[in-house]
Length: 133
Length: 502
Image (cartoon, rainbow over all chains, first blue to last red; front, side):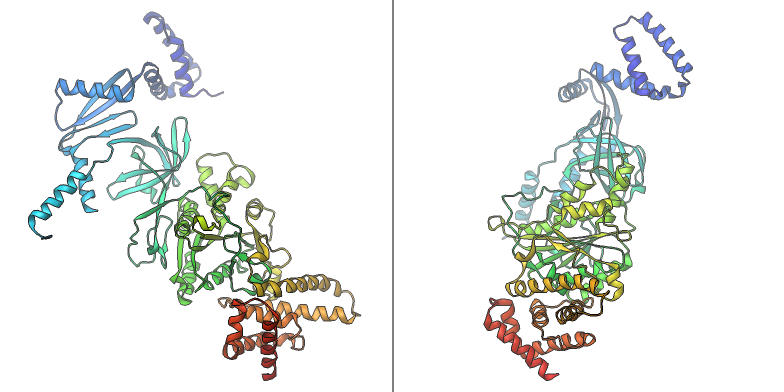
């Protein structure tokens, strides 16, 4: 029977749950050996992706991306992080930042499959279409 | 004072202040794979079934409709050109169920299922939107069918009467006049207080162009909308076409109007849905159609209705068309649609090639609503005529064996021959109901027993012309008054007067 990457990832995740770092290393070694035996080494990218998704949902981790016109100061960043944590209900946020001058101002916050567009650019274009009506 | 600078500036300020920015929170997803008009997406965890999703690109937006909600993704059909969508593109949930623009401006136009003009007469302005899928009206809102739809086709109006709010299937092989019946019916709705929607699903563009020209020529486009999904359009458009047509019909229904909607044809619709379903990897069933192909048509045809006074009193009459393969009515889709509708008009190749056109098989065709949807005079003559037709069918098969027939049987056979001659009718020449009653009355009362079978067509034409010129009053009485002895004597006199002129 074929084993899907998701099944591999779930198996690995359950095997290393609540284990010490030393134990984990042996588990991973034998996991890789099993992959080789099953001729499934090519699936490793997909397994890693599935594993990290699984890890994130189990631990309440989400990834977010904040786009702004310039580098954010610490205060704003903390405020945004608190806001994301509150709206998403997650416990940890892994953040990344992007700078995009065309936004004109404000920020676009993106986590998981949610986008919150607080940019001036969108507000202006909304206003334009409202006036056109 | 309304044009001073300050006033205008004040207005602008006010409208800007009143403008509320839309909710900035959006649900997005990414395209995993795209092909054959189907796209698989990740993300979009908040999206609803049959919600519109938007693919933005530099030429504007392309819309899709969510059809599959899976554990780790979403399957959607694309309404439009899918070659612009690439793997990794972003899709946004619009928060709206698929809806189409509707309105009075659609009348007389040829539109695609998304409400865009296809006839080159400019953009259609409509600010009302109706959802494509709507739950059919319930029992409380409905009323039984009691008003006729005059098709103008003698064989149908007499023997298979259709009422406003009924669903009557037109079924038969290819090329034997299914569309012709529907088009004649639309043409005959002139001045009958009826809006018409003609939904084309997967037909040849040349055929459609022909039909639209015909409708224009007979002035039928004044009250008709053509919803067009060609054979070359993607399956997604073919799939939503009948629902879009019904949404337009419901707009008029809600205004309390009577609507006639023709779906031409639902077998192609089922094929388009099968294509979509298989591409979405839904399990195939009989003839590879998906399991919900019955629901596909039943939910569509249930929207045909006759509403009672408290709910506006409008109606939607549906004429679905099904094409059979080599006369096989026991295939999957034909049996499904036969069981959903309130009767069927069965067209037979044998009759067609014998020259009995329209090739309606009176034995297999039924209307489950029956004579409650006929005007009084028609009820009187049609009852007797149906009996004659049945007797003739029985005798005709039997009479082939014997040559020694008694006088009564011979008379019945002669009458039957004349009957099938009377039921012949050219395409695009619907006949007003009063004229139909007149010729049927002449037939069942033996006025044309002494006319040679070959001359009957001529005789009938002459009778109608005569009634048009000298019997206008009587024609009006037939449609408006009770069928009584007085009227009967009038009709008798008119027919004998006409015969005297021959």
